[in-house]
Length: 388
Image (cartoon, rainbow, N blue to C red; front, side, top):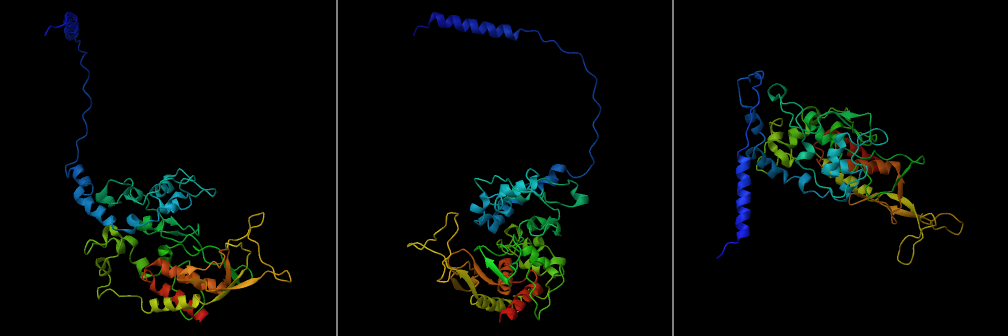
């Protein structure tokens, strides 16, 4: 095969340029002054070793495996609620981070998630609760676990009330009510306008504190606020993140472990709060049978509400021009608030509503009264007496 003379000339030209570049002279600069000597480190354990005690796969893998079993990881609460600005603080990992970022504030100057909401919410994960260490002097200051929040938490329903549980303040941020109890409308009644009415599924912290229940008078005394032994002698993390027994409790599963209980209950862990479950069931029966009322509204042939020009449902009037009133049976059904036949609001006596609130408060705490036995029993017992 013949080689092209043009290609040969090009190769010679390129090679000659390489030789020219290699023959450039190199000039060295003048010697500078030596820099100051650095400070000698302190003899002791290698700093890397301290970090690796936690930041290693050996340490973190069991945490990840435990967390995968937790309600935080497997729950569906981060769905629609996580997109909404007023819910994202607890129902969206980024919303939780943004709440503490100092980037957003509401009209009252309180921190808030992004007011624009979120498109793709995700469940709470490691970097939601954990951020940057406040101190790296672990020997003298102790571990801070890089928690995003360890400061006292202002209650959502009472901006003048703060709860401080140290490392458990991360839990306090979300595990508290979003609403207060029913208020008398001036006629001794209360109208339920939402099927979500109640403390909103997570009043654990206020149950521990012994506040935000409806203090109906009765034979059971309400304990002093903040006096429950699980409030004074333990914390959320102390009971819910103890040493696991079989991998399905304690640690980052957040499921209480008997290992944590037996540290105090040396004679054995109580099986339940005596008599509470039976009284809760009895109260529900009464609440399902109380009588309230609602207006009758005009509906079309498909049973849909007919609305006026302002978008309000039209009340049916009798022959005298008075609104037609219908009886509503039960303020709760299967533990859910009764909004009436048309979902526009059923009205009950304020006492019925207070008893219903206490039922929801105790059951949505989800501890079976364990968080604050005396408070839970007093709320249920006095509600029972009032309705029975």
